[in-house]
Image (cartoon, rainbow, N blue to C red):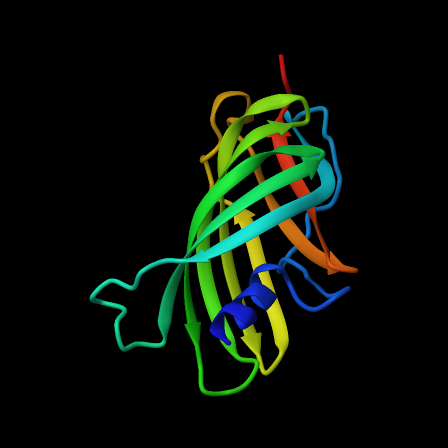
Length: 169
């Protein structure tokens, strides 16, 4: 039951539901700035794998899972991550935090970055914030910042990623 609730949170809800970040960034480009806001969209496949509970988790409402994703579309790549989740005795209420390292190609630039998740579900109502960990971009993705939305429609998982990236040379 906890895994099903976590899948709901991680993937942002039932068919057609989505969770928005707390603040969306507007598209803009200023001649005085070396950063431009871009938008990436596509689909992804995800696998959640329960991990053995360590001594500190045994007997608690906490669980640990690994995350593996394959991204398609404007972001082409893979990710690996870890999730720590908590279930409650109230149906439809749970929470999780997760970190995942994404490696691949974004806007024609290759590198990696880390996404940080913070999700709660209150009696079936999800809230999910996924953002790039500041200064986690590597190689051609150095300086990447942004937020990601996740959506499920007709059993397919998709993302919308609003991000800023320093202009290339």
